[in-house]
Image 1 (cartoon, helix red, strand yellow):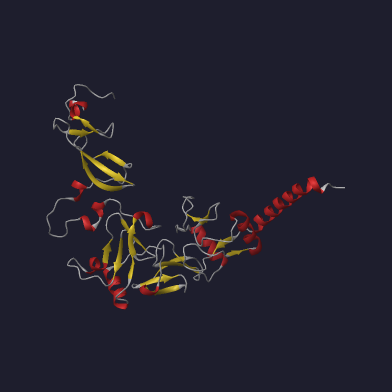
Image 2 (cartoon, helix red, strand yellow):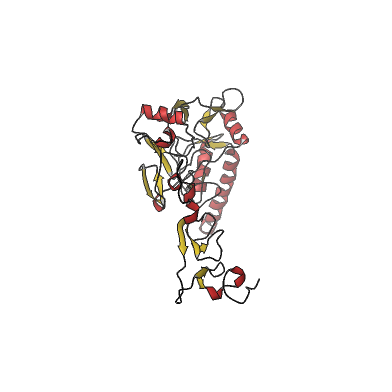
Length: 332
């Protein structure tokens, strides 16, 4: 007679493994279908054996959730990009031809959004999958499964590039509309006053540097409080309109006072193109805090910023070959 006191756990474990193998084989063909346009979708699978597919997913993820099209769930049950399991939001990724063909093979009447552009979508109804583009003034509404007028579509993470004509159309329909741009630094405001440089720049507004546009509150907020997701952040201030001279104006170039910190570590760093001078770059998370300048020494002699020590040094501590007064050379 079997001793269930000692054997039961092994029997149960073996049975679970067998069931898992069977279920995996029967659930090979399933894909995730978004129920809404929200970032992280509710759990919904289509499969050759839906019951087993759902059971497998719950075993793997521990939660009855799914991230919708083109996202993954990490071991903590979070929606993340496949390339970065640390992230806690769903992010869209481009579909491969194989993924598109698989969906169309399972449903020949299917239409679904292109996750990389809000004005394009995939259509399976023509016998073979193809990518279609919405007419001018329209975007793809993934809830209605059809192209719809700009103001009626919420693109969420799907990027959209607006033309001046598009913005005119949107703002004529809704003169108070406020909505995000493709980058995290700016947004469009239909009620903005006229701009001498054109209607596009009339509608487009930039958040102050070190602030980003929050889609949920429709406000500019500190960078630490905003999740940009797929919207890229412009970190170099000289690439922002607010730091430019403007058309026909003469002013001090931005790069003179704001070094490019996008590839530099945090803290005080050598100023690009101004090595071993009194000037240095002040950086924080790829953003520029402006240009720093070394104070003079006790004898009122200039001090230079050392690219070796990342500190301001007396001029006698810097070799003559690098602009100092030291009678020595650094070891190579």
